[in-house]
Length: 131
Image (tube, rainbow, N blue to C red):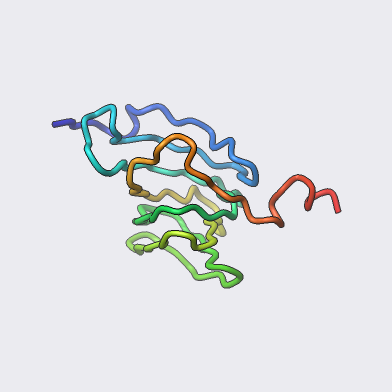
């Protein structure tokens, strides 16, 4: 069993292409002996966002605090504390902070084998940003 405070787990910047003002804490993962899933806490600064991307595994999201939107394809859906989101495998998605304080959410994912493809949406690639 592991019991900890989220703030005791180091936050790392999300360095994936297309991310801005976003950090992640890996609260529970396979290093803790969790056989199937990992629990991560994301924090997105005001005006920040996760990359617009897709991958072959699911997400389960629970919003802890702040305000934002989840982009589903081309549609933005509002989010606030207490909301939950299921993102299915292969769905293009992005989380954006639209508020004046940090947007914090838990994200549960299955363990992701090394080499699993993550596809950044074309409009988020460096090439697209230069056109």
